[in-house]
Length: 112
Image (cartoon, rainbow, N blue to C red):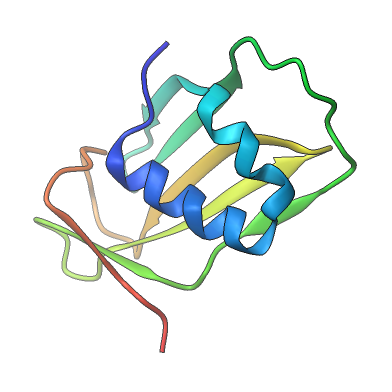
């Protein structure tokens, strides 16, 4: 298992601003897999030693930001999946550009 990186943590902060009941989950999340898809990146999340109850929150969340990544003309979009109160994944997608899935030198541009 891997730690969440700065970009993933930043996006999860946006999620918990809308769903405050998920704030306590962040400390217990680890990345079980990061899988590059050629035009995106699928990040699978797992909980480690989480003893709280999960609620019935179901959401596909994106704040509409665009994520600038070095080497991509149009940047990335993303969606965070919350299923039955569990934050399960973050899916990053390019706008039809080839990408190696490396999250380096990023900048988050807020939606207007």
